[in-house]
Structures are given as structure tokens and as C-alpha cells.
Image 1 (cartoon, rainbow, N blue to C red):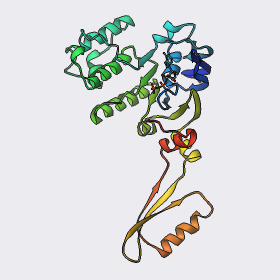
Image 2 (cartoon, helix red, strand yellow):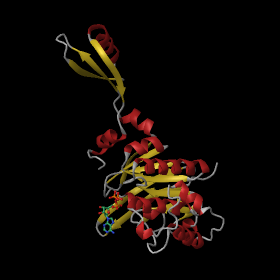
Image 3 (cartoon, rainbow, N blue to C red):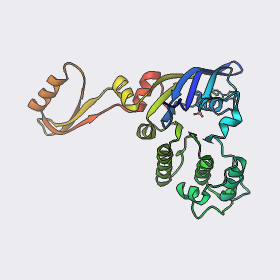
Image 4 (cartoon, rainbow, N blue to C red):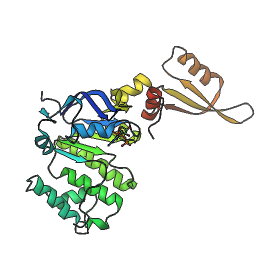
Length: 287
Ligand SMILES: Nc1ncnc2c1ncn2[C@@H]1O[C@H](COP(=O)(O)OP(=O)(O)OP(=O)(O)O)[C@@H](O)[C@H]1O
């Protein structure tokens, strides 16, 4: 079996007295989509900066594709794609010129830039100056740029935030296509629905620590409550609802009573969302 795409071993980072990342360890397998979820200030960007060689950990080690990032940042950077934080595009150049510049930087020759623009929904706009692009267009160009060197690992920060639903869906499609090509995706997001849909596993990060890391399914099984919500009609004809929590010893009797003695109009099963679970684990929301 090939070695994992990412190994983080006891990573620590401080800004002065502030412990921003507190002994974080995890592994991401090749071809996996890992969601990295946490509220503002949790330490997500700082972790990514250590993984991508932009910050040197105070202690601990990051290995990408088996290479020690702090020792060989250039070697690692040639094999990854990063779309993170503030747009750093050349506004006085066109979209396609920005991509060409990046391709030259990486010594990539045979890349289909028009194809890349098409994938992020910027076909027909490649010759426009980036300075005239909207915020969402710049974001999509940054994603295209991160793909220029056909990266083995793709780091994406909130890739669909602020995009209209059609563009957001196009970007999610690109993420899945990249994964199918064999790339590993490290996806930072606040969007639990997106994480649930796209990610094989999600890590919850809070105050510089990973508080849970598992598949969305397992997290829901382990921490979430499944329930049945029934809409009922009372004797006087008014509608009311009742919730029955599943997976408890008394559940079968409660459900049988409900069906035998009440007038049930609708019956729906519901499971906890990742957001519910995050709140349960940390006492705070993701916003
Ligand atoms: N350059 C810096 N100097 C000092 N403190 C910083 C710096 N960058 C980040 N921090 C602090 O480190 C902590 C972690 O920040 P980080 O940017 O890693 O969080 P984040 O999870 O990426 O947040 P967001 O979702 O807002 O991007 C925060 O308390 C933040 O204020």
C-alpha cells in the first residue's frame, strides 16, 4: 500500500503567547477528501500553512507524500495545489495569462488552460483582465490556478463560499473529478452540508485541537441522536408534533403506542447534522 498523502505528527504553532495549534496529529490517505471544520480562529489556516510549508512548526512534523515539508518545502510545493485565503492574482493580467505565469513557474508545458477555465465556469472570460473579474470569478480562477500542475494534493479553503449555487455546484464537481483523478483533497469549510456530501472523513478542530475525526456517518452514529418526528391530529382536530428518540430500549413501545393510539398524519426520521454534533462536542457553533 502507498504511504499516506499527509501525515501530521504532533504539530504545534504559537503566535507569541497564543497557542494556535496544539499538538495536532492525523493522517490523510491518498485519494481521500478530508474536511477540516472549525469556527473562526480554531487554527485551521495555521495548520494548513504548516502543511504547505508557509509556516515552520514550533514542534512536530508534517510529511506530504512521504516528504518532510519543513526540510523540503519547494519539493512539496511542486506537487500540491493551494487555494487559500486572500486572492493573490495579478490583476493587470488576464485570467489565462495568470494561469500561464503559474504554469511557467512550475515548468508545466502541456496543460489545457482553456479546459481548466471551462471547468471552473470561466470559459469566454479568459482574456478579460483579472482586475475586472468579480470576487466569485477571482475565486474560481484561483481554483483553476491550483490545478495547473496537476497536484497530488489539493488544499482548498472555503472554495464555494460566496459563490452562486450554480458556480458552487461546478466547483464541487471539480473537487470530485480531482479526487477521481487520484488527488487527495484537504478541504477547509464552515459548510457542514458540503462537508457531509463531499468528504470521506471530517476533522472537527476547536481551540487548536482536533476534537473528533471520522466519517460523517460514524460521527452521526457515535454522537448524534436519531429520531422520528410525527405529525398528529388531536381529538379537537388540531395538528401537533411528537418526537421519539430512536436507539433506546423504550423506543419500540413508544412507537407502537403512537401508531396504535394516535392519529398519525406524517412520520419522518431525522438524524443529527454535523453542525449539531460539533455543538455537542465543543459547546459552540461553527459560524
Ligand atoms: N499572524 C498572526 N499573528 C497573531 N495571531 C494570529 C495570526 N494568525 C492567526 N492568529 C491567531 O491564531 C489563532 C488561529 O488562527 P487561524 O487563522 O489558524 O484560525 P482559522 O481556524 O483558520 O480561522 P478562520 O476560519 O477565521 O480562517 C487565532 O486565535 C488567530 O487570532
